Length: 475
Image (tube, rainbow, N blue to C red; front, side, top):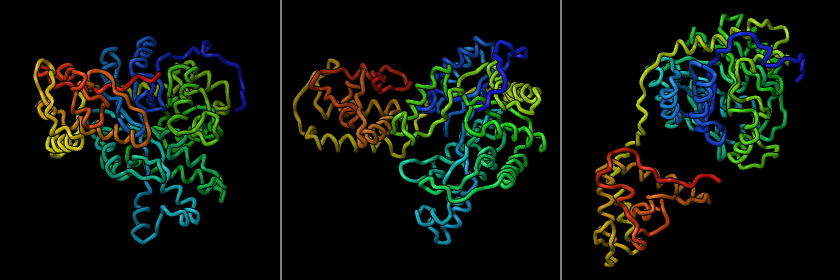
């Protein structure tokens, strides 16, 4: 990108206040680098009043971010970068008419429509109040229950437009990153097939008209709670999109908001984030197939650093400085719009129908398969004489009493999924003392043979707080 000036953040004389409203923590697995603690610590040091966390497709960071913000006396804005798709009705109609939209033949014959149906756009969704929080929870839950769709190994938990409208109360919508519905239409010049071969082109007028349709659609539903999101990551044509979004926002009376789509704390963390992305996609960091924002600009910037970026490149070409300041000030406006409310941060184990019975049956089956249900050997465990059957009954009864049946069934499913794909697992800690964990395949050591304590893992006196089957820390 052409550099047009030479300004530094230290030259910036405007306000220092800013709120990051589009941010990924390490809960955006193998994509975000910083922890909730690290981001909140930076907010405290800079005197920032608030921060949002918008993980990809889920709200997994809510408990930690909420607690850390409470500790640092920072307003926490819950949110999510959702995978959005408004072409589901079209897909359903085509499939109802007998058209196989997943087939390679149909996709090759209809590349643009196929791309719109199967590819997802991103939207930044923030919770304005407790009602919005519960609505976003409903939306992300629906995304996993009925929104999964994709080709090959990759599936996305998508949210449909009609569902977004149905649960709109208490939500603030930012138009999204460069892969958002509006920005994507402006950048979507070439129509390609699955092999990446260009099979068609879209002229500027078409791109702008399609972007405007999305703007009108969201404005009609969310009104003053719909904002035009500006970003400056330093990728192809993002300066053109930046300036076009400002013009469209002015035309349709939509407020601007500047976001940096932060994925890491400092510029130097870019390399680590790129490695993580490569691991997630199963490719090398120098692979041409690596899907990645090839720019080290997505860090936790100050307002001065954002101004430096704006002034040093063509983002500012023909744009008044007032647009930049307004886009920054609107991050504070949004933070003020968001009401503080209490969130229960305790871990909620999904309720599994007949979970207690399923756990009992599974353990009994594994005892039989290993020939341990008829093993009469006696062991001393936690000062008591027990057989395999005795110990299994003791542990199951305690798990059920404490309400942990679902936890163990889910943990087993996750580890089995990984093992079936060749992933190494070696749980550590007190879980090694559980015979049930051994029978379920969670651990690999028979605790009775080595006299390991089960009470150390879950004693009778322990309250109902969450267990932790610890996995080894990455080296």
